[in-house]
Image 1: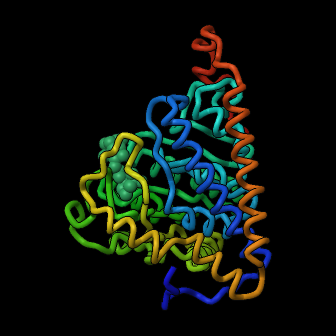
Image 2: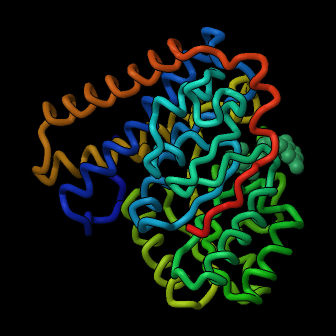
Length: 336
Ligand SMILES: Cc1ncc(C[n+]2csc(CCOP(=O)(O)OP(=O)(O)O)c2C)c(N)n1
Ligand SMILES: [Mg+2]
């Protein structure tokens, strides 16, 4: 990989840097495995892989504290793993098995964990944005000093409900970070063809919401921007927008023929900008890890991912009478 001029010098410890490497690699290997299981017919329905975008969620999770919340879209496996959800439970849900987070009844786009404060997984574009503001409203009301990370795409950023949410979030100074994962495409439509102004982060100006663009292929830049946004929200100043420029290497979903971009475009990003390679280089050049150390990490992660796939294959499918359970919650949500 060519060394990037803009790449930040590490302002974190070697242990933190190694942890980012592990966390990003776990997402990448997990997604590669999910792609394989999909190809084998073990995963049905929709499946949107996060490969290429790993630095976004890993950098922001590094800026989060216990009790902070996150809500995202259908491209959600990376977010689950980064906030500490069990790969076995995620893979079993992808394969529609009882051992999955939604007992095999939700699939790729519909998993939740109140323990990890992960509020989905939502298939309707933009619909999670007001939900994120709602979570932040609850936290503000409870005065618990927590922050909600609300992730959505560049395509979703053109929806009306996003701006209704911006208005309310600014009006009530809600502790919410709007994270726009700008991977440059909404399905097969490039940002250039769909979006009137390229700088989506400026769209909060009309509401008095500050925002900034961030290099989403540099986990250190994401972490730094995340720290700033979190500090802003926790100090009671209201919402913040982070437009994180990233790139997905795979198709929109598993059934995407990807005719809207060239192979060369994808290849160039992989070769010159890959976020995992970037941290690998920092670890090696900084003398924090040897090639052997990194190989050992890769091996360890492959074992975790293989164990998640084995667990998923061995877990039974839910019984048919399970169709009638978990439809309406019968327990009032706890004020975490
Ligand atoms: C309300 C709504 N309209 C259309 C769709 C179909 N759809 C699914 S993903 C998508 C593109 C969204 O792109 P973006 O927000 O950039 O997210 P990305 O897939 O790039 O992560 C569309 C149009 C949908 N799921 N919901
Ligand atoms: Mg997009």
